[in-house]
Amino acid sequence: MTAQLLQPRTIPTASVKPSITIVVSPRERFGYTQQSLESIYKYTAIPFELIYVDAGSPKHIHRYLVKTAAKRGFTLLRTDHFLSPNQARNLGLSQVTTDYVVFLDNDVHVSSGWLEKLWQCAQETDATVVSPLTCVGKPLHDRIRLAGGEARIFMDIKGEQIRRRLYEKRFLADRSAAVIKHQLYRRACEFAELQCMLVKRDIFERIGYLDENLLSSQEDMDFSLTVNRAGGQMFCEPAAVVTHVPQTSYHWSDLAYFMLRWSDAWEVESLMHFQQKWDLDMDQYFLQRYKQLGHRRRQAFLYPLLYQLTKGKSGSRLEAFAIALERWLNQLITDRHSRLSNNPVRKLTPADRSPGALARKSLRQQQLRLSALNQPGVAVRISQPPLMGH
Image (cartoon, rainbow, N blue to C red):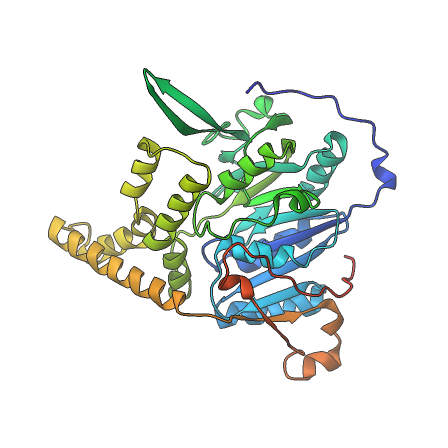
């Protein structure tokens, strides 16, 4: 597609009060929870509501979230067991009543004015989805991960063979934002990541909730294709900048969720479902993805651990044994999680933040049931009390 530079509509933005809820949910770990959450409150000037989905975080992270929810007045939803990213997002989304929802992963660090710029773009373009300039790693806000992109399904015709294939292109990936600043401008696009995006909430009345059959991958592509098919407009607003901060060393408390999140079983189920849902032919894209099963886990902690244990002299036999052992452990974690059901959700709302409520059994807990965990694709509905503004 051809990038478009559009003239903004004339909107009296100063007189329009934003109606936005930020839904924060786990991506693959919990270790960056505090830094990410503090960046939201430090760098966001316009009013917003916040719903935090705490899906099985370690006790010290949960204690921090309970304390911060009481202080900041946001809604905290807690499950004692892990959720897939789309399950967690849907749980948060079921509580949203504002015009816009922002999906934000718990390892994203935002920058000054990020939300204002996303909302301003949505007002001036009437976009369904607005994504920021997403960077990755440290130093913050420099190396570009995504500046919008293209996503579509096309027919590949070779002789008498016709194949339905996926086309994906990411704009300006792995470039320095400072170096190519002149190339960064608002543009229409077809692809965005759920890692951070502003969405007009009424789109979900047309397309339904996020697909919970996509457990570990393809959720960004699936949502982008679905919005495009429904006629929704997508924009990338590079004036809004956020950074995904990957973990450089994994804590034991993060390993179980990381291994489940990127498990072979979840990846295979996601790829198969995505391929069947969009009626795509098996091609090199899918073959390569199946070939790379487990590579995130091995790159993140297995290979570094082997390097430390052997002082860089790991042999092929030891590596093969370690990979086999890791796969066995990964399957064990996946099987254990699959046996969990009737996952209770405890909900802490802003109304519970008085000193008296804090003293009563660590905040009053409302027991709810996550029926969607047993019925993939079914959204969870929970009654929403009035939220306090920020």
